[in-house]
Image (cartoon, rainbow over all chains, first blue to last red; front, side, top):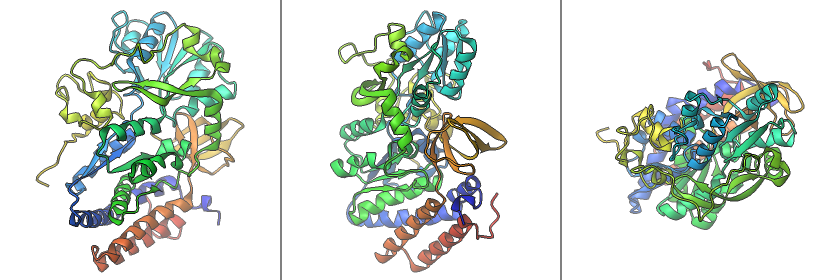
Length: 389
Length: 106
């Protein structure tokens, strides 16, 4: 039988990967490996994720509450909206106020700028001031819309490697109309992961991002076990996926077999998506780029290749991207999003959390996006530690 | 933001495919993978198909669980009856994935 012709994989995925009895089994396995580690004198294992969707699954399903107290799951730099520098938001607001039709996703629409532009602190505020700002589901929607109206338009293009093929594909296929340009702010995750584990220093295991890895390939994370000796598991996004990944990390630690494993093999290959990788390399150069609250990270940004300069909003509108020398930390006073993004602080350790900074009135970038650690913790009622269970 | 939605390919064009995302939502998305066929299950992100799902690999994940339990049992940390129970559950779920199970999928 052709395996693709069997039962519906969408409903099966939910049935299997949200199975409560299976979850109980995996928790028993996790506790077993944790017992082995404790007997060896291990008191704490910090496991970092690099994806907001993993953080969502962890918080939404209360996974922290079912893990041994010494096993800590930490959110790393996994939210592309949170790390988009204020400069790109400010530039977008400026273009929108100057009469350019501005497209972006719902998350970046609300992303606050550090410096207001003519009284506007976000694209949503620019729209309130009468600017033509449009929220779209995909770049393709913007391509179609801009082609229809024909007016000068720009797209605030945020995202990691999962999202950037959505920009590269229409560019390479010559589907983008000449009146639409990109404010390219796409970023690459492995360089940020390297930066995080180098700076945090106490990461004992990594749950690597499943959907980023569908594009870049699981092999892209080999440096974590190879150079840093950190057990790494590329994982999916259902609760069972995250539990299995935790079990696999603990198993590696307990059996001293540190390596890269793929739990999300139903969607991820070792080499990645050749089509997407080819298009990314045709459309973009990889350059040193700034991350909000962190600064510059080598080889971590996508920039349009010169052959696509007619679609480059920086070229079209004379925007000057920040450089290492011109860069100033772009967080508002009191905001510790930079530390939260790197997993050095928990959202609840911020003095502004759920006081000045709430999902309805975000102050820092991590409270804006549905994938931001602060936003997730705020909406799910997550706590730093769970006691009395 | 890297949220991926599972869908089933309804129609394949040169650059654009029609995908049933469930819940009555059918969308035109860009083809971002090789050798896409009608009936394939895919991961859609931001209007692009970024990956095809492999049914065989669903079973592989369950094997991970069984392997982890067996290794643990070998150290004496997991009681044998728990190991048997886990094996039974993995077997039942595997049958479900292969289309031979009698469990109702909601």
